[in-house]
Length: 306
Image (cartoon, rainbow, N blue to C red; front, side, top):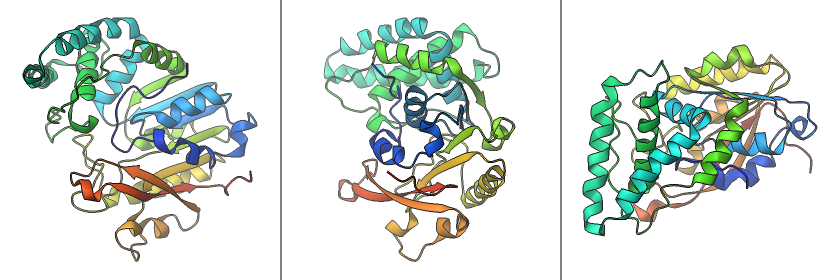
C-alpha cells in the first residue's frame, strides 16, 4: 500500500497527480534528482507520489502554518501514539446518534482552540500528539474537509454532515510515517528552503492560490495572508532558484478562468514554461460554480517528451 495524503486539503493535488507526473522533470525518473524540497507542504500529495516512485534520498518540507507542521512531525515521529489517540475520538464520535455528533465536534473544536496558547510550537512534546489527533478528527468531520484558521489562528470550520466518515486510517498513517522518515520538517517562510536547493534538487511549489474571485479562494488555510505581493516575491524566488540548476515546478490558479485578459501569472513567469491542466474543484460555496477549471503549472524546464 502506498502512502496517500492523510489530510483533506482544499486545493489538494491528488486528483491532478497523473497530469503533474507527465510534467515531472525527466531527471527524476533517471535518478539524477535525489533531493525533494516543498516549501508549502499542504496535503503533501506530490511529496508522497515522488518519494515513493523515485530515488529520493532526502526531503525538506516547509510551511508557515505551525499547526500543519505540528501534525506532520507527529505523524513522522509518533504515529502509533497518534493512531491510539485518534481512535478514541473516532470511537466516541461514531458511537453517537447523528443529531448528537455536532455537539461532539464543536466540543473538540473549542478544546483545540482553547488550548492553543498553551502549545509551544517550537518544542516537540507529548501535547503535540493529542493536538494532532484533534486536528485529524476535525479535518475528517468538518464541512468539506476545509482546514481553515481565522486571524487568531483558531480553527473555525463548521461541522460537516457525513454519515460514516473515515476518521482513522491507521495503515495509511503508518505508510505516511514511513515515507516521512527521509524528511526534515520545518516551520518557516518559503524562502528558508534555499539552503537545501542545488542542481540535484526537485522543488515543488504549491502556494496558497491567488483567488479567482471574491468567493472562490484557497488562501484561508492559515492566519497568514498570501497576497499579490507575496506571489511576486515567490516569482522572484523561483527565478533565483533557477540559477542553482535545480528543477522547479509550481502550481497556481489560472486567472484566465474568470478573465481571459488577466495575464498576472503569464507575465510573472514569462521567462519560464507555462502549462495548463484541468482540475475539478468542489470547494465553492455555490454548487453551480463547482466544476472543471484550468490550473497553471510553471516549470523551469520544457515539457518532457513521452
